[in-house]
Length: 208
Image (cartoon, rainbow, N blue to C red):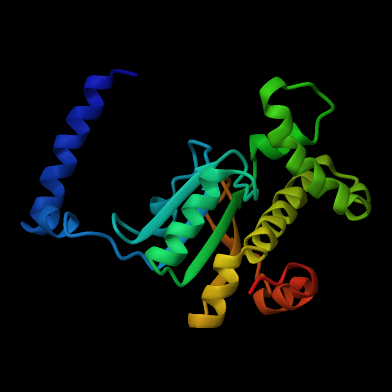
């Protein structure tokens, strides 16, 4: 990759935005008021704003390997708290994708060094759902299903947090689980039943 091309692309992008609105960057500099927090995968094929058709200022984005929401990861927890408590987003989306390298790595019996503790969280998802997953004979379909189940479990992890619970009570914040199909470009809504999940875990995870 010729990095000079990146800066040429940037100049072209600036001209394009100013052609749309001469105040584009003045408005951008006034701050952000996104309605949506997107937690997605770091995979280079899955760009949050592009696949949703949104632009700068419309979505607050956090990406990591396999779109994980881990309670002891200060990075993701800081993003969630900032987005919920300060930006006052009304929706949080966890978006996985088929063909996820992190999920596939977690399905393998291999020592991957520093990745081991991170992938262990995905393997925990496999353990929780092993009866369903092991009943799927086709490895590719089992892989896709683990992608979906991982998204659902990360949604549950969000619902366990005090910030999300409080924002739900105060203003009706909702958590959503989606999967991006890299083969078709389609976004798939897993139709997470947020209120049911909340009800199911509140006996143990309720935080005043």
